[in-house]
Length: 359
Image 1: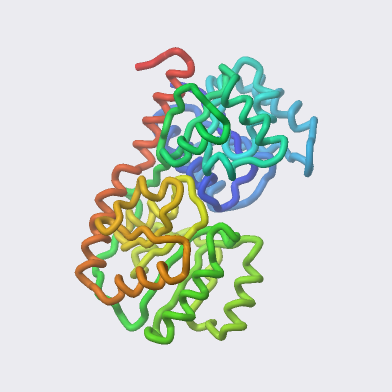
Image 2: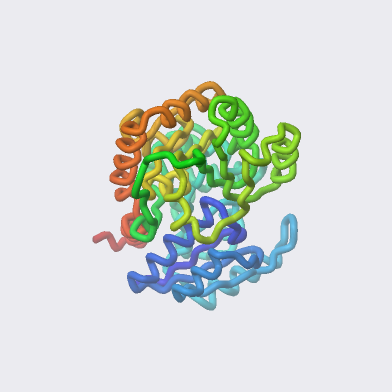
């Protein structure tokens, strides 16, 4: 069994953080010794879940900006714990590389390479991906894989390990018949790349024909107040509901009728996998790793990044019960391929290969 140190900036509710939590809990169940290190301490449902599953948590109490003390703290922790593998996420890689000595680093790219880093961090990571023998980049989808090859001119082999969710814990829809309200679900941080403004505009168009339609936005973010004001200005308070973060989405998703994800870009969206596991008919933009999940017209609908494409897809699903049911059930079948257990097994293979201990 291996000792595995996972490092991420903070345990906010987001795709990368949820993936880390799912992976860490699954590895711990398999008998590995897992610890999670963060820059900043943050109480969240993810932190609770990790502790509940026996995963140790450490916080480095990093200061804003470059903080050399954080490198020293991290180096001391690595020397004390002596992990076999350090698995990094988001923008922690440069710090970990400086502190890790000879310990092998696995770094997961959670978004397309053009968006993953910026400034000096992007330059450093690009150099590491191309030249560092102790740092192995992992892509979460073939879209991310291709972006890494192009953006950073990486020639070596790059493993692809798709994100996974605990599909066995997610409650599935029992009926696809619409009730009094048409419930449209979206899960994601309220940030520009998720296109909440476009979703509000889509609701404004749809409510004229379907007065009982309700959009539910699960998540929070820096644009929460802006979106709330937009909803008020358009008098859509009864039709667009800001639900905040939700710790029981595994049982809540099945209450939705349609799931939408009209993002500007994505890596391998956790929320989409979860919605598919709940059996929801899903509508998503054809970006990043989304086409790895959705086969257009068979287990979901792929759309262009514009309001008319989103509105047309939602209307098509509202008007066609048999189509809703067919692609919803097909989505659930596809989601089984993206379980937390499958993800953990693939990462174990990557860890062992990096250590020269292939099965």
